[in-house]
Amino acid sequence: MQANSVADTPDMMVEIDDVQLTYPGGTLAVEHLDMRVQRGQFIAVVGPSGCGKSSLMKLASGLVLPSHGGIKVAGQKVRGPVKIVGMAFQNPTLLPWRTTLDNLLLPLEIVQPYRGRFRAEKRQFEADVRALLATVGLDGFAERFPWQLSGGMQQRASLCRALIHQPQLLMLDEPFGALDAFTREELWDVLQDIWMQRGFTTVLVTHDLREAVYLADRVLVMSARPGRIIADHVVDLPRPRNLDTSFLPHFTDLVHELRDLIRAERAGA
Amino acid sequence: MNRRRLGQAMPYLTVIGLLIVWELVCIVLDIPEFILPRPSRVAVVLVQDFGAIWFHAQHTLYTTIVGFAIAVGFGMALGVLVGSSQLAYQGLYPVLVGFNSVPKVAVVPLLVVWFGIGTVPAVITAFLLSFFPVAVNVATGLATLEPELADVLRALGASKLDIIRKVGLPRSLPYFFASLKVAITLAFVGSVIAETLASDQGIGTLVEQASANFKVPLVFAGLVVVAALGIAMYALFAVIERKTTRWAIRAVDVPIGG
Image 1 (cartoon, rainbow over the protein chains, first blue to last red):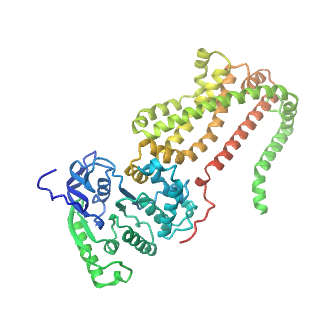
Image 2: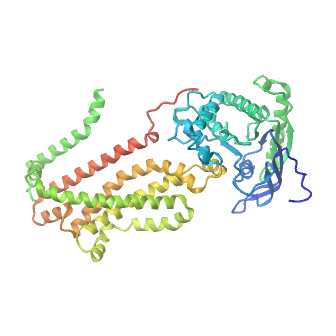
């Protein structure tokens, strides 16, 4: 740790300090990446495609280690997979041979301390899964197989799977990217509700600027590759936001500002 | 409804049609029995010599199943290794492809040198012919795991073994069962080849000796029995496949809205 790095503060969930990531083969994915996420905050990261947003996901969850610089999650230096992280992607990746219930139990079969208690407390875990499914409007679908669910429902289930082990940090990589506009807006509200109830920290990687402004407390803009943060916009819209919020002039102004930034960045790249 | 029933009857109708054409061609062209016997004649021989044919068929069935069983165990282990380790894949894949392109008929004489004439070369030939599709299919199932899913699990602290056990193996099951259908028929081919070249028992031996004595109807009767056994085994594994991996065959299921 450098002495000149920003002082550690106990309420920081993610601290990324001057991180560089080079993939084997020499591709520089991110460089001089600095990022701070406060505990409980909802952050959106936007940027031109190929800017290293997915690398950011892997770095913060400990799946890859930085070539240079340091990362802390919940005050702990990241040296390997960070188990207090839940992840969901554009592809819901539910297992087709497991029911929705069993799909959601999967993380509990793997992560400690649940893993050790799994046999003894399976009944309790099942009840937890059903309760979580109910909060995203999937009550009654626990026994269905994923391929019996629509795309939006699969994505709700995928979100639940990311949350079932009560992670402190939720990392989402374009989770709603493959959904139609109506389903997507529905899921914005689902995510906002569950985040407001549970208070976990969220990092949402997206290229939908309306989505970023609708959901986030802060929107970070990443540069073209090698990615770093070039702008940090606070979204001061009141919560809970709803579809009316998205028609306010202030909302539209924020989206336009972000769009201009990214357009300039794309032109420069 | 009628069309569906017709569809179900088509395999039988086709076979009966072919047999009738065959019978008629033999009669009209007056083909000698030692060139191409009429199917009715084959049927008669099949009934007459059933005792001898069944004795040899049992032996073929036995060598096939033993060779096949070894192939399934070995093929699965090899598939898991190649499918889950990049290094094993890079090292073994070219070797396997090279090995698979060697015609197994050419290996049988070598097996005879090593193990003598009889059951062992037949079992080994059946094994050699049938392990490859099992290994390749299991490896494919494991290797085509979605990287995002692996990330989700790895972030939770899942070990490589966890991922293979919870996701890789169940995922490769449809591939595995599909390969069994192919492998069992190949195992039959292997057994019969080895028996033809180097055995005193089995359908291959029976066919070889019968053709040497110009008992061509008996040759055909032997072939009919091998085909019947092959079809029966194929059907058995097709049923097992459908029962165990219903989730992978879901064309008829319609997703519900919402």
